[in-house]
Length: 354
Image (cartoon, rainbow, N blue to C red; front, side, top):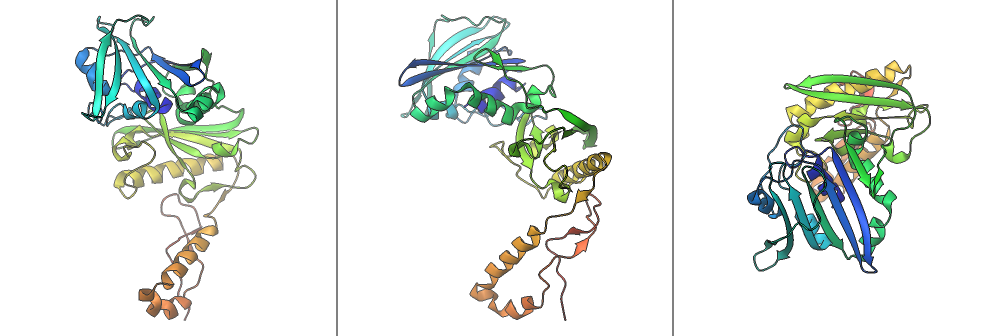
């Protein structure tokens, strides 16, 4: 719910806000009120307000720079909230406050208008208020640090100012980004199909926590996924826990899945081009630091061997068992066609022993 609401506030198609405030209030033992307010452009008319609450809305479209493209995610509120109030104020004068709920008879939501008794203080914006009744959710949302950790995990690129001057607060306290003291960095851009991709790679003074030992791909301001193996290029042991970074890859919105947690087609030309160019920048960053790089980890061959073993247990593969006994259980070393690394392990290449 926090991730989706923050996405709507920061998304230029919806609000385009520069400030997002997340506030919690314990109403009683069984209820916690969660309020998310932004200073975005607000909704211009009643039709937009109804569309905001419509399940499966197709009001968004794929746009480079924005993460949302299949609706505003109203279902997440229905799944978690007892009731919801939405207040929106447009700079051109439209101002409404509605209370809405899910109606199972129509399998959609119903809204009723109410007087704006708690007017938004900014010139424009939207406020969403929900009541949480799930015991575990109440316990989690009563912890400000839990909410801040969510914001940092998915929106740290925003907190770092990589998308301009934006601010997110939790119960009045500004969320500070994860930003350890650095000893070196490399900031580089490259182009694919007319869209700019930006790389921000850092070497830190001290080791970073395990959950930050990655390079993160950011699309539409949101962290989509970390690059676990960074295309077969690894920092060596002396610095592997002291390097991390971001790739602002808004152009990948075309192959970002609807769940915004991965990519739909890693065999497309777009992904291959992205993989090639970003891995080259990462390799140059490690070389700039004066440290060598490590080739593909040996456990790749172990995983492949296990896969072969499982196949050979199937009856239809038995006739190939003798042939595979002649296969060396170690991949060939050869030059990486993408990043230029010498002697990386090619998972699918095997050497036949006569």
